[in-house]
Image (cartoon, rainbow, N blue to C red):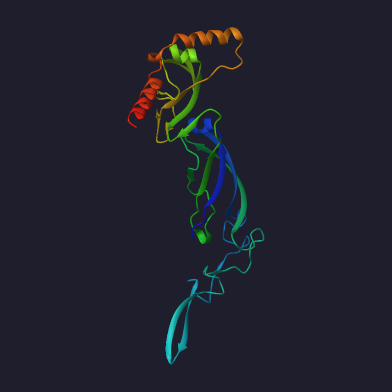
Length: 264
């Protein structure tokens, strides 16, 4: 009979999920008894073939019902289906042939793994009974959130604050990436919420780590606070110097409102 699978949860940080890592996983598995080699019999002895079922682990039972005879197959109650009887059981495993063992293995977590995905390590689950194969170790991966980046598949997203002057005049700004800060030139007249893309700065593909997704950053214009009177006067002078042509969205809205009033 094949052994049961074992489930283990592992938590990693955002960067480890993106670039891959190794983690020591500690778990308890059911393994063949080291003293009896999994036979269940004490040293110097061996299991005997069950005389009740002839080693099949099953017995045929005949029943009469309404003058008719029926036959069925049931599990042998003498050997409990194993086909063997242990008269001198191993003291370490009480004749089961299995013991609980604590084990540590190093697991490679691939670059690009996502929150909630699983890694299966074949044959590291519980050993099977009666010589059955071992089950698998199933590792459930949880990824901690990042303070700057959000992830969707292989694409990363983040917000980048810029000043009014930078958005108005255009500027070379610093953009955070998981590989370090990158320079990016935003154009003159960049509007709030405008998105820009840095190619190949996202998350690697799990099955093709040489390929990476993109980083999409959104420009947010930060309004200055705590201005002194001189700065406020300069801002008022700037506002007075601007005309409707400098604010096309505002002008379009005013024109639409005029059309609505004229159509009433």
